[in-house]
Image (cartoon, rainbow, N blue to C red; front, side, top):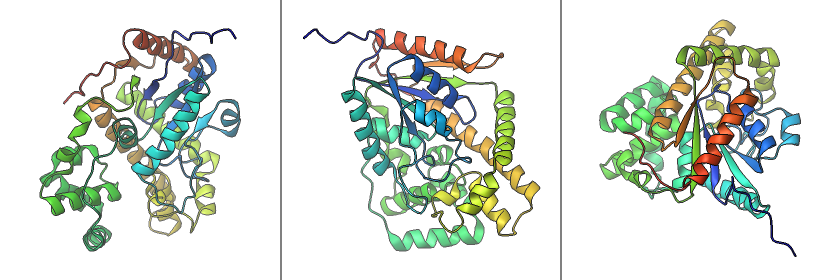
Length: 327
């Protein structure tokens, strides 16, 4: 039997494609998958939910049929989901990809999930149900922003990384601080060491004005594609976690008569911009090997060619060298 052909541009590590929402990750990842022996692993906390298609910007069915994708539509919208569960399922998917002689391409929309996948999870204190009930009751009465401001006082690093609307993570960070007297960010210092999963990473970057324009256009397309109807169809099925997704939370409030249509769309655009800003804050701390400047009328296929060249170059020059994230 003749030996298997060598693949000088790929190996048993993984490729990581970073970028804020609306930066063009989906289109570029598909072109990368067409040109290279990779399979896409979605690293997105909301694309895991079945039925949440338009608002999470999932690839359309024809692309999902053409290009192998993993970690999309793996749980029901009623279910809760965690970094630990995601990590277990994603590692299993990545093992299968490698067994087929291919390389996982991680397309990241949720930085926390990516860090948990690549670095592993820190051992924190167990949940304290009564404390969580008290914090959630306070959030219902005064809003999650009040808890986020308190978190900023006791753990500014965690507050910077956690979106003010991400109540679940805010509550967990405050819980860890109250139970241990130490900030959760301090307990996550294992991110300062080498990752457990070797990888090379490329990030997509756009001028902020262009990114915000793309976000506004994307929200408009989602509305035209029937996001409101999608939310109506999911009525009563969205668990607490899924119901916090940008686009769904605002339209749930609209359907409940709390805000009008124009205000709902305005909030979706605003909260999507906040999400992009939050992602960029995380990515600045991530040990990205190379950033790709986007824009200038370049097509997704052309940008994918540049990204593919960078991935191959980084693999040749030592894909597993670790650069500590910028402070």
